[in-house]
Image (tube, helix red, strand yellow):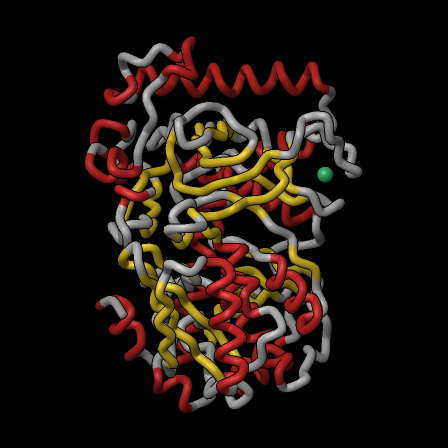
Length: 452
Ligand SMILES: [Zn+2]
């Protein structure tokens, strides 16, 4: 807990809830004031544009952004935006070390967003208020298409660690913003011991929507499913944030919470958007920025790392920014059933650093590792940590069904994926620590950038 969080934890619970409601309301007004309404209309209209109108609009967005950046950001002043593909790549280390040169406004005139970088270094960007409002207009328009609006009961699983052991002893695992009907659940305390507190709270609250980390919601569903439980009142939609959504997340969350999962890609440093449509496909939103996909030699590719250029980053311009996530584009001749002509993405792979490097099998990705628990009983959660090329450590939180036989089956499944030359050390643990942000990482690759 930070000092602020500690001070907060010492005030009475009902005052905590009021403070959260008021803070939320203040934030809501800032995010939804100014140009917000104009952009809600704009993004609704954008979906009705024909190809010609859309391309004209993309060019207008692009030109406005590049002209602004050229005039205002010292970092980009010698860039020739007419030769976009030969512009230098912006690295995370640039944003961390050279922010003063990149940013175009004072912190006091903008909105600060903090994000935990992959290296653990904390990163900061400054948004202009109007970009923040535009980003919320995009997100709200997207969520509204799937039935959500502010004021509908929502369970939120992300953010700060505001729940203490004292709360948990009183069976409290969330704070409630009663003005907007949002319950903020702690993502730091979901485990077997506290499960009943979470489960009772969710059943009593009866949320229509869930927003937050898929690993947290999945964890609750996993324990519930093991006990044969399902939410009494079905949730309508789960909107995941911040982490990669895996197929098993979707499946189990649908079974236990009764809802569909509708995914989106954005980031706290301001990446352009990829949004899931009603037909269940992921579309790049071309009015929010440029997605380039490149291979290991930085040549254009259907699958690989993303370089993003985001039109909503006037405060801290991101141009050809190596965000550290991978995607696979769909072939351009494929059309979506929803009728939209926005480019299709086959899948989002998440952090490009979340893999295990095998001497015989090369990079083993997150999706491949996560499905190694298929048909294995008793694993509550696990984490693979690689700090050298010849071995990995596997931490497992298990329950009574995790017998010797199941353990061997799991090890065999991992061996199949990692190959014979990677030693697997299994350790049974009570709990696996989350990142400071509250996110859970299934794979931690500590090999360092030399092997990436
Ligand atoms: Zn579609």
